[in-house]
Image (cartoon, rainbow, N blue to C red; front, side):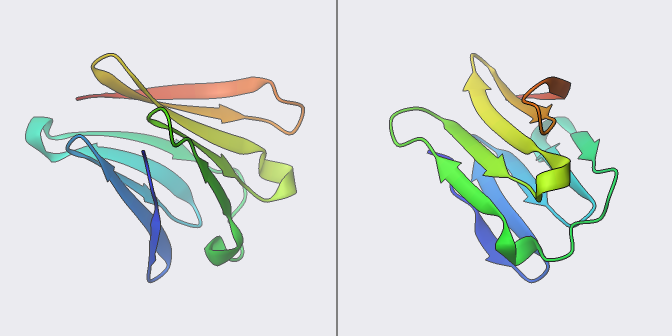
Amino acid sequence: MIEFSLTGDYWVATHKGITIELSSKCITLINVNHSTEAVIRFPKKIQDVADLSFFPSKSTARCAIILPVELGQLELADIGMSLVLRQFDTAGAQVQTVTAHI
């Protein structure tokens, strides 16, 4: 299960060696072992990151993150040997995807 905790001005979670950091400007997947980062930048700054909603799945390694209305939502999913981050717009259409290999 992917669970986030609020640390100062950003949310942090770890999953299989990958650190996930969610700030007011972007979400970043960091794999220190492979010296890689995957980033999705938001078109607008999130005013208060403490107001975000997280919905981790208890049965699988997935987590949905509801952003402010105009920014849509994010989905994190452990798929095979990768942690996949997808961004969806307000209509539910996929906007972009980034992957960090485990």
